[in-house]
Length: 128
Image: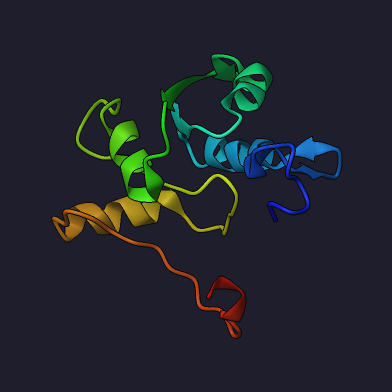
């Protein structure tokens, strides 16, 4: 994907004349999410100048990586900004639909520390 949108963060790739991140945030908004914390680093200004401090009246905050922290480091950095005991963590350049309320209930009922949602792929080769 980086070869196709090398001048932009992957989440800003245009899909039907809209940045992909808008599709993702709209989906989350429809699932009842009331705050977004975005872990940003590479070309963060593109995302920040597009979304500013809200998306469709939902607050957007930024956990800025001043130097690359890797996937786990970026998540850890963003989790510092979470209010409360739990949060959904997603990648900004991919999406699969599932019921977040049901996932949250499963997490709570199991008294889990962490819950992962996975999707079966017939051919996962492109992911290495």
